[in-house]
Length: 127
Image (spheres, rainbow, N blue to C red):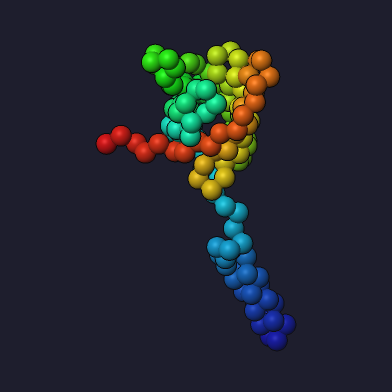
């Protein structure tokens, strides 16, 4: 009987240990998916402020004004955890960046090898 009681309590202790929730401080942080979201850059090189729409299908649309003309340029994007890559205008301009503290910090390079850094902020949904 003592052996049965010992086995019972050992199994009960294992069950409680396995079923106990992981403390919040030890959980991996949730990485947001940028699919279906819109982000706005701080002024970017000679492009000024640019708006990026990251579509669910991996396509991207960017909007900016240049010389008084509004431009819309298509591209594509992908995300791997906190790493973000996107390009516009058939890879005329490529961005590599990371999601950090609610922003996307990117390094941009165009085909002329001109480089710059930019910070994108999420755009609040229109109500």
